[in-house]
Amino acid sequence: QVQLVESGGGLVQAGGSLKLSCTTSGRTLSNYAVSWFRQAPGKEREFVAKILWTEDSTVYAPSVRGRFTISRDNAKNTIYLQMNSLKPEDTAIYYCAAKNEYRDYALASSYNYWGQGTQVTVSS
Image (cartoon, rainbow, N blue to C red; front, side, top):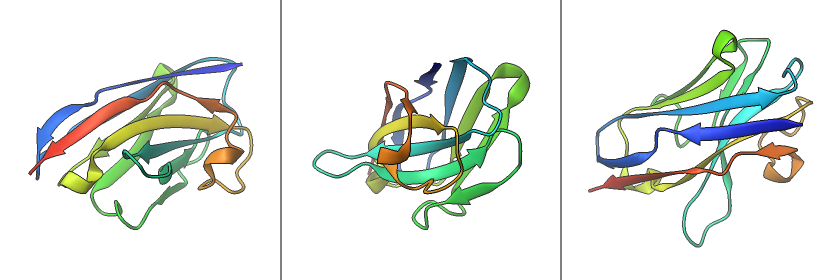
């Protein structure tokens, strides 16, 4: 089993920054892909960014590329999402997810483990 706990959400003005954290526990995440997804009210959950636990392989959704950065600290068992130049349309609940394969990383239904989510609200 893998447990994921997100933190770092909050209220920020447009143009501001936030850094989300996803702390993992349970089994080791070798060969796991870890991603951030987000879900706005009335919308489907959408892929934001992915990183591999053992490689610096990252992928971003076009809507966040150049503004968001996903990173990891293996020693702290933590994945981060640095969000800069935030826009009101970034407002959503942000979720951390993990799975033990690399395929279909943008497909939410393919993930085995999810955190409880953290709210990010960007005011205009």
